[in-house]
Amino acid sequence: MAKEKTGEGPPGARAISARDAEPVGDGAFTASGLYGTEFEPPYSGALSFMRRRYTRDFDRADVVVFGVPCDLTTSSRPGSRFGPRGIRVASADLVWGEHWPWGFDPFDRLAVVDGGDVTFSPGYVASMLEATQTFAGEILARGASTLSLGGEHLISLPILRAHAAHHGPVALVHFDAHSDTWSDEPELGHGNMFYHALGEGLIDVARSVQIGIRTHNNESHGFEVLDADWVEEVGSVETARKIREVVGQGHAYLSFDIDCLDPAFAPGTGTPVVGGLSTQLARRILRGLEGIDFVGMDLVEVAPPYDVSGITALAGATLSLDYLCLLARDRPAVGGD
Image (cartoon, rainbow, N blue to C red; front, side, top):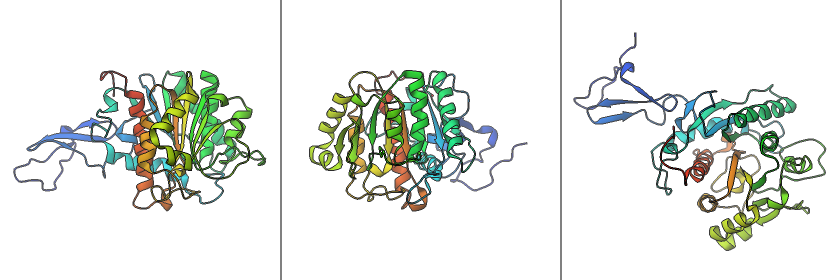
């Protein structure tokens, strides 16, 4: 039999039984009290992204969120394996209905579920690559799109493999401090996965663009590169216009490495580089990408051990939610979850 909560509440309030509670998303409960509907606070409850339903039933989902807790090839500071959990925790603070400044709740328009994390053999890159590609492929086969939480940036490669198998080559919209296209590293890693993606034909490079780059790589490999200084100089409107121009028509994939942001805004990452974008500038650029046919996104390289007051994870959760709003903007407010 369910036990009643015994803590004291406001004067005149009754105790709330577990049987009175109605689930919202995953493990967040509401109940009627003296002062109206009472919500489980963001620091309690079960863990899922934006408190969406936690399930492996993807048949009715528009978007499936999943984590890839991997930092096997990190070249500097490890810790991004804790990124998916950190982003989920931070996202609970954003569950307040309308998301500013969009003016609507994306979950009124999109059915979004949290599929949990990819399971793979710890310590084995090949296992992570295979398991992640299979997991993403299952989501796409059910008619949903992907929102992936990392984890190191290498996770983009198996997800792109799944998308290319399903859609064909996609345009890549890549926010980062680093190009991640080094060609002189023999082993797969988080600094060369897009070079390998190009070689495998996963990316339509003529429609692909990198934003926020501020480290040297003498080869662009055909990407349009909008470096951090250029973005800062021209602003969000011109940057978004240029991205839309390059991508044009056709499917696109968004990959956002949190180190695209300046360490003042995102210190919790493995390879921070000064001189990056502010969180606000990045959000404004994302809001300007209407009309691009995005089929998936990853938010990677959040490393909670180096975070300050959780601001990096919060930035990652906010940008991920902005992406969902971008998908939902032109949809009617029906059929969400």
